[in-house]
Amino acid sequence: MLYRLLADVVVVVHFAFVLFVVLGGLLVLWRFRLVWVHVPAALWGAWVELAGWVCPLTPLENTLRRKGGEAGYAGGFVEEYVLPVLYPQGLTREVQVVLGLLVLGFNAVVYGLVFLRRRGRRAGREAEIELED
Image 1 (spheres, rainbow, N blue to C red):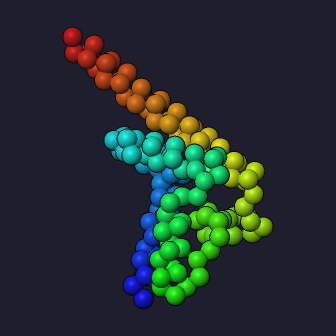
Image 2: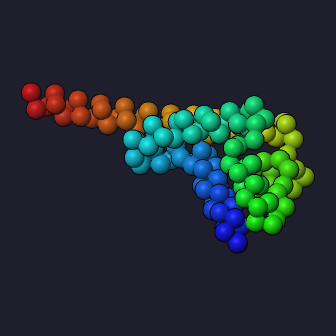
């Protein structure tokens, strides 16, 4: 029972990490300091997809499931939990590359917005300082 519970916790953490990789740039718009956590996470997530690797959390989950008396699964987290919702046919190498590129592209757009927003704030502060002088 404990192993099954731990495997479920790993799934929740894994899913939260995937969401953070994909959408975490939006949090950076809110709290810029999160950039130091999000950029490495997004690069890791994109690299795992582009390189065709399996995230280390997947073997951990499978090991916990087997120890809990359940069957593990072949492939990775994306294939097991995300793709059945998005792509019922399954994961191909081409889909992995597209997912990795989508993560990079989406986050590039978001970070462009972050840059423009911070630049606008900085320009506004400089204008206030000039008015005070």
